[in-house]
Length: 381
Image 1 (cartoon, rainbow, N blue to C red):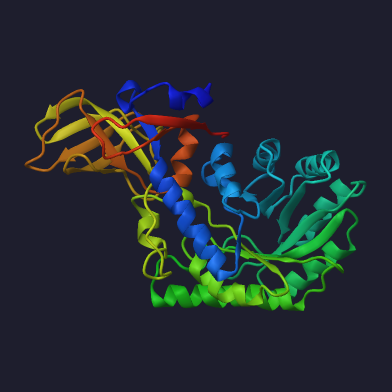
Image 2 (spheres, rainbow, N blue to C red):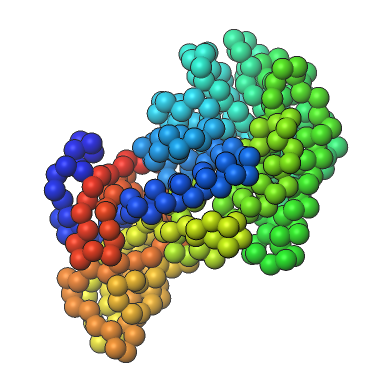
């Protein structure tokens, strides 16, 4: 049982490599930093649960004050519901009629459950309405607004208004707000990217101001990936008087040693402590066929590689390539390893780290000679 792992007296050296770990102190630091900042900004958080798909880590977020948990798909929403999450935001359009019907079944089975999803076209609204005509209570739907060069989302405010009108007219649905994702408009933290992100966020505000919501409903105004939550708060929070401003940043809980270290605003830009990477991989040297080359037992099946390759942290060198089950570690001239040695790896992009693991160990101190294993969490991919 995972609940017994923390008391088993295990050390990292007792685990078979490769292994992914989470650092408890970094996890707690990141949670406290971002939730404290959100309270100061007057915004709510529905962190994106698809990052870890680990209900035990979601519960930590809820305990810290999260408004809800965001997910990407209907099946992830069902995982969240069965894990006891009472407010589930599907940050995506649902165009699968069977999945939409099942969302209605989940709502019918629990009066305390709230599920919200997005629609970026009238076609999507029609699919949802056809699946939920006989639902005992409505599914909350947010109009998703995108923009030219973006990902999903209606491309204009006028289109957004037409989608909202279709939701309002549809039985089984309730117009619940406006949402979008600003990430595609800012590939970096340059002034031009920040200006483009702000301009996009202003369109969300403009659409929200033009919609007529059901009487008595406090609508949701939602944005905020993990790269620009500061800009989402700056633009949206002033409109919190008539809406719940909900940010969906999900990577902050784990953070990383790559992409989000470069992109996250937490630190000087927000007047907070910087976030810390809570995840590491530990990989064993299985071969050293050349003096400057070592092969590790972690590969594409074990560590993320979509944005950056892992970075060795306990020995000087560079990971130059990954195969399915091997990492190529090119050693610096003064560095040395031997077969059997374990190398700590810094990782980039937690969303593509956790999906490779069914169980993730929690450790007390990654800098210790042999960290204590103080717990473990299961993932649901």
